[in-house]
Image (cartoon, rainbow, N blue to C red; front, side):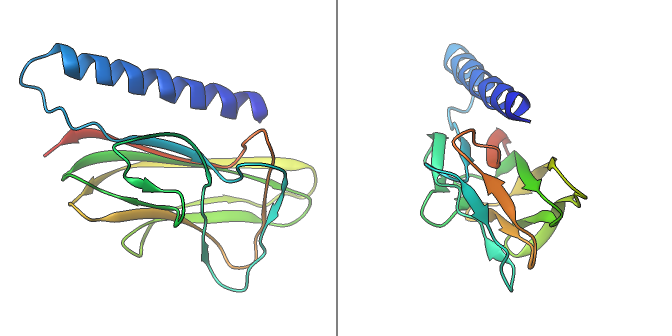
Length: 166
């Protein structure tokens, strides 16, 4: 799982850089750039959860935050422009405890990221493209009961970027 997560993060950063370069090279293309990628822990390792209620995850280790639309203190992405955005979430679980989280848009559940391990370590991922209005909020909540594990290898990530404005 470490290699896949690290490769994915590097790939996202390269795509973000390419998109920025293309937008600058073509006159008349909307110059609004929005992209972020963050992992759960900024240092150390350990479990997050279990909680008695769904709890918003705060991804503290911000790899990139172009446009500053992701708030590392609240864990919430706020759309600065109307447009199509894409979001991905990856979680890691271990032992025999469920690992699960929801991606939400303004309290509306969009998808679940879920894995029910019997032993060992497992990871789960999901992604969605969403039409967002200015001010819409997107965030990840861990389910009530499950736990996830993170370390300096940054297994749990939340990323998103603007595909195009509308």
